[in-house]
Image (cartoon, rainbow over all chains, first blue to last red; front, side, top):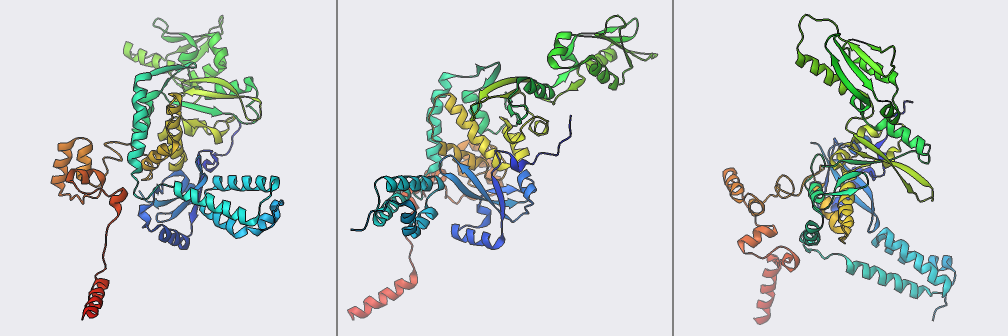
Length: 82
Length: 418
């Protein structure tokens, strides 16, 4: 059996595109939504995708979801450390 | 009256700003459909820029009107929309339904499994798609299947017995099973040697019979020998732990070619992803907990939606996917998959009254009292219990007053009278 390098989970069809939002932009987004960061859905720092993109607690992650109803939607998750 | 435009490009440049505004407001799919239809109408019948602007304006308006109103109890609507068809599900199938060569839990029991966020489904199943090289050839697909299927000595042996006189364990291999699993006698021999029970030799007259000569010891018990026999039976030859059976299935893919893929009984996502010949990007398992652990919370959310949708569709029930998406959103909100129930969404509500109304009423009330919890009466359940106005729908609207303007107002009216 030939050795192959470890599969990158970000390429899996079930994993949407994740990206860390720069802090200045995150503040703007939260203001627009009128909420505090902890009111966003969470994602754990230990989450495999969060680890793969190197997110730290307190970051906001932008997720480009493929949606069956609207084609593409953008969701945010707040990185929590537990 | 403005000129009819038949050229899409020139119309597009004339209504650029309106289009940009629409693109911001509309979801991608609706926007694309709008552009597509505008383009076709323009090329076929012609459109004036004014007409086009009006169409776009109306589409945006319709879209905004179709959005859910603030204060709409979407959770309750979702619960009812899933719950009502769920009652029909109970009547139709209860437990197992024979599907292909497998037994798969379907219907209500499976749906309960999904929303309860169980660690292991009662029938774990994986769908393994293969890479470009192995996808179109049944023999190559079989090769990958053999790599995955968990094979132990017991699967290829026709007989394993203890020879007390010569103090050895006799392993008789089944040629049919060896062929089927793609295992050679040599491989089995190596595995047996690795167990370090004693030296292994083949029978000079029959290559399919292997002997394990146990080292002579002063004392031995039958229980001890039995344990050694079990060790031999359960020795792993190859494959991936927990994958009990692999079946090759074929389907016609989008390119119109026959593609082979594997369906397995048992699930082990992290290990299957690394198997050569597998297309790791498309591997799927019905074990949502495994997906959460390996692919993250967003993948788990998608898997939850897919599982719920599949169960309902299989039962012929038509539930709007948005209800399922809401359920999946709530379940994955805290970054891990929570169940809908006592140990999850309902059990973690901040209001003690809402928790008491759900399950274990007295227990919850006692605990809340012992902890000195307060109920702010903000949620629907608590408000119903207290007989207040629900904070949903029109009940969301609150009259508020700014005392400063009030004082100013009285002064003004006072001066007018005086």
